[in-house]
Image (cartoon, rainbow, N blue to C red; front, side, top):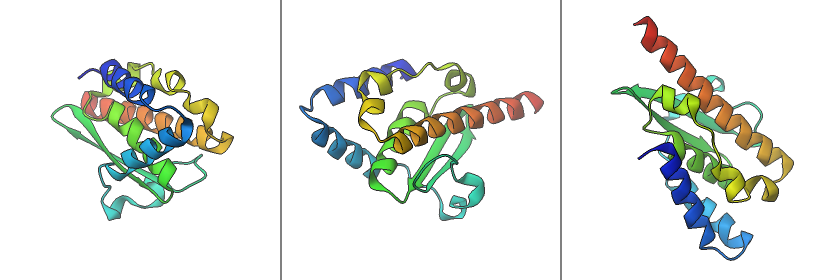
Length: 142
């Protein structure tokens, strides 16, 4: 499934909910299904800077596609990283780097997150794209 298709799926999911309390509950549910990061990656090197909560992200290149795993010490933040991983995971570095993410604005996330959570979400996306750049560069050198 293309990144845009996953984004559209998420937008459709969020349209089902009538208010933001229900949407937050859905974000928390998404957090419960985040691919678990191995405990050895819960270190400073894998911590996303710019998040109010602790968020760890690990990426691995398998068969030309990046697979992400993550965790957070906060339930909403864990759901947010779960949303982002759902969009980006299992895509090539080039697809991730060139993706123009629109689902966040379409579902109104930036408007309903605190400024610190919104900054954290931006930091997550930035880190995912940086990881994709690194994987692409490693692939070019090999």
